[in-house]
Length: 264
Image 1 (cartoon, rainbow, N blue to C red):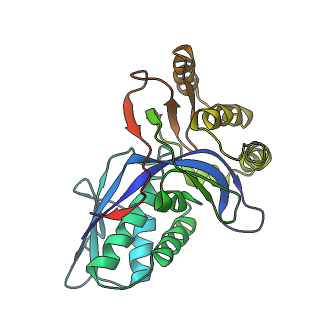
Image 2: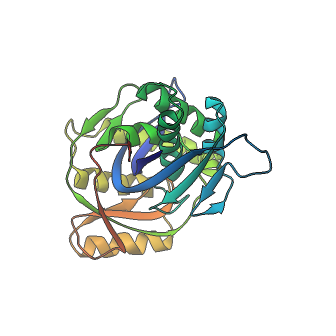
């Protein structure tokens, strides 16, 4: 069975005060990850559990999730977004794998249970805190650590990526996380009740600069978008710029994914 989960770009986030879920504002995009899950006769420990683009790879959250299901399976992943560059690719891969495995093995898990399994695998692996909740719902999602709010948006999104930033390292950086907690909470608290994607993107850029994360490449790309009349910011967490209100300024163009993850 095959399943798709959209990528997600986090504009602003902050650690939740009482839970392991982050607070944040993110948008699901139509470029994501496809997982093709197949049965194997028995899980040979010498055989790869996950392949990415046809090549064996270590993909800890996916492996943890399949282990939790206790099935003999292999997941072949096709990524439409760069890995480790702020697109929530690990969350998308994990959620798509679980949805496909649930159907392949007739496990009868509810959608909510699969999302929670994917979330726990991400947290345990240290690769994300809340991406799967956005990828499950689609659209623009704003959460405060409780039930997130979804907003339908049809805004085209452009993006360029210059390199990875290890999520595990960022989450383990105490000084950085203190700045994120302070600045992210303030930004989220100030968001309007019905945020536009352009307005959120501008707020996100103020947040990114306040936590001192943008690189020179990111700053130059944001400046190019602003010079063309658009709004741009840095994806959390990756050396990636996303933009709205422009056409042809950044390397890739996609759209908001409103439907969320699904079987294919």
